[in-house]
Length: 453
Image (cartoon, rainbow, N blue to C red; front, side, top):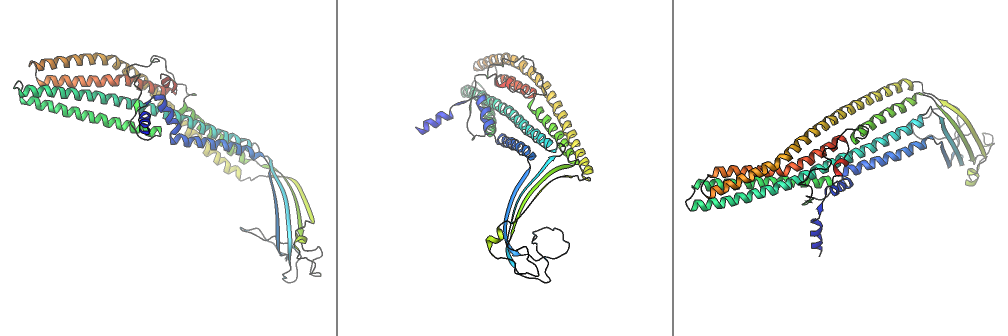
């Protein structure tokens, strides 16, 4: 039962729409860029919270001595002891508990739009990641559709080569029979054997090409490698929108929109950097309570005025508060930021040049796609004529040979012409679809191709 189910699943026809959808859902690069986009969206929320004030609370209990000494110090890297007490003539080891309780608020309430530009930068970066995801999806859809058409062409070519091999075997059977009966020279059978071998090689090459395309399609779809049964309902028809006008809309092309978003993000980076050359105005507020096991009259005249009791030491007995407004301005930052903004501006110029190059390439690709479409249509119209003529010629040469009225060379040439005509017929329609896909890729509208199915 399970085997029958597996066979049924494996025998399902894979349409081009299903192949594209599966590829978009499974491909690792698209999944990764989706995560990058979500990370950028989270950074917008993080940037939006930067306008909030910093509010922190702290508490500590400690046990130690409070020897004091007059003298200057400055903070160094590492932990420093913040003990405070009266200076004694000599060191003593009196110790008690102490406590510190602190609430602090620090708010940069005005920084000349620095936070606003940081938020705008995060939004621009999010837009860039979003457009990157969309252009990756677009290009991957085009890649998958192209490989699907290649695989379909490979399967059709394999059938043509199989038919060619069958004809070569049939011809060899006739040649061998006539040779054994003395009606044809022995060299004809050698020629027939050569044609069979040639047909086998051509078939093997066609199978190899099919395997390569099937493997590539499986990789692009993110699925295990397998034998694909493709939709052949359109192999003998051409697109309905074949003669519709195709135009490039730069503001809608996924690839160009991505390059535009890179430029926008870089220019927003310039604005953000420029904000750092201005001062920052801050509001500061603090409330602090302290407790100590040392009494207020603890000094060299009363060195025993302290308690080792824990609760006596941590109970807050003194409180201070502070509110203030300050401004800080690093004047040397003006020169540094100027160079940083200049560097970013050159980056923006470079991204603009990349955009111009890609835009030019896409316009050239669209022109090439239109030319390719015209050639593909011309070949599509010629293929049936060539096929009928080659088929009639092969039938005529075969009958003549069987009646001893022509030689093996003429039959071989007719066989080759028929095989070539079948090959051209099989790929002529496929080339029209490939040309339409190229037009869709160049115009940035994948719908003009996929909506045909």
